[in-house]
Length: 113
Length: 113
Image 1 (spheres, chains in turn yellow, blue):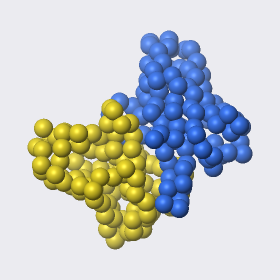
Image 2: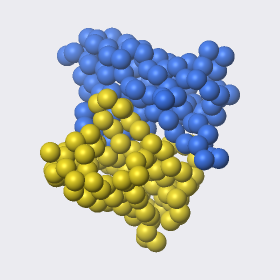
Image 3: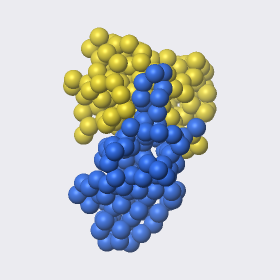
């Protein structure tokens, strides 16, 4: 158990809908990272927050957005969903900024039908 | 594009044999990490090797790094069925003026009992 929690575990929704994925980092970790993992694209970095502020953007679509709240939990919002958005979405956390060891949550499996 | 690429994409060995996975990357790095992912689960950090290190051990894991060839290898000795998983290398890359982790495409390891 990494100490990172993600909810929900599974999500099935229809095209055009909007969903929110939630992540609680390890106690004391200030950085939260979101990744998308699909069969054809592999593990793609989406966005990072550090202590409530956006720190870096990766391959994140404009239909997607995220935020980190004062209690350091984070939410990833996916809107106007398409079939191709079906994937595993992982949240990871680390104590500080920088490319050091990250602790991954169990993921949310999103299926868009 | 991926910073790190693993080789082979898939590997099948008998329990007790050694497994070697390779990772090549494109740009200079500060450190390289290896992660493990059981099917559909979150990634687990295995080991980090810094750019000024050539070899590192952790239990049955041995990682080497050759910065002149921009490559790393992960050796799992005396493999067990429980080692069946996907293994990813991750390198740091400049992103928005700070270092972020970029994951390779992974090697799927199957250890047959």
